Length: 442
Image (cartoon, rainbow, N blue to C red; front, side, top):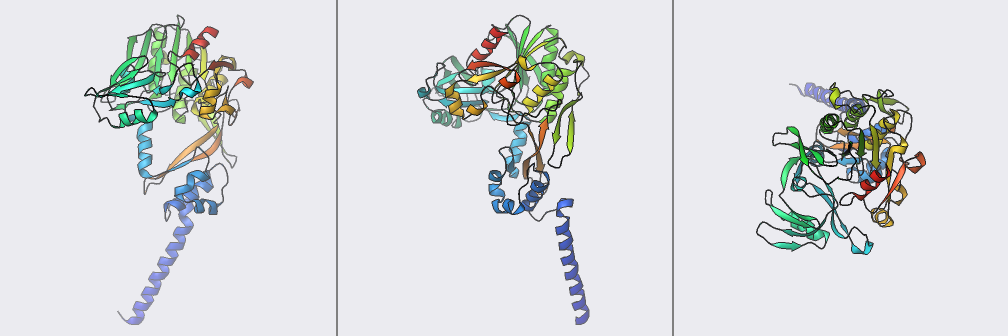
């Protein structure tokens, strides 16, 4: 090849490369092709985030500090972090299945002090051992018989962390001793009980769901004909779990339901849409709409009730007396489901009982401004994944409205709406004194 020909070829080649770069740069926002993850995040935030943020502020923050720039519900995830979140939300867990807190004696609570079991996940090793929320852990015994006195959160954390998977140990609580081991398990989110029986959702090693029935007097104070149903989160297989329990509800011919959404921070909208169908299928006033989202450009998306099953044996009877328990941890999808029930006439505001916490709890949790009401999260998040890296960005993208056009963001549902209040020391107590109070008020 002659020099002049080679020179012309190189100039032409370089021109094509330069033009391609310009075209690629111009195409990034519309075609979803980006030079790096930050460019991808900038484009998403500017197009979808429900408030306007200048591009230079996003770039100055960078991926490392992006969370501080966005609202409390938005977040950037590395690929590894997002994989872990996905696995957890599908119900796959590892450990013993509890959340716990340390309550100092200085708070002067009548319920006690020390390491407190705040919640026990369904189908977890802790749940199967008989451990219950509201218990205080006093000591722990390893498989070799070594006993550790538990007098601080660190004592408990260090003991649990030192246990190998499958290694049995015993927790000594103020209510008895419970033996368990760390395991992989599938979380269940729904639970039902009557005055003499409880029904739990279990999964075997192949992930097959079943309803386990056991005699129990833990809720002996419930009236005949009343079922207590708790929903912990809007994840995993919760709709099918609730359908299975409602089938039992109908078989037992219960006529009253106490539905517990306390400390339920929400989850997936699609789960809420399916649960809405189970509660409203027999309601004459049921709407086809579960909620709608309004974006910053004024556009709306309507999320309909999802008629995911035609099995009428798992629909809540239309004449059921429904009572709802809620507190300042009841948020997001929980509040949206309450909106579905209220809009469909399944329950009224006067059927909702919200927690009236003591000063100690409000100060310890920093939630005084949310007392006697639900949390007030009336906004929606959308998660975007960057297919080239596996990174993800969860963004608040819209405000949420109930079918009756109510938006509860930052105000929640409470006494101003006609809800009743129930005094309680903490989010949960052993034996659930708050539930007992509600039963006495009904």
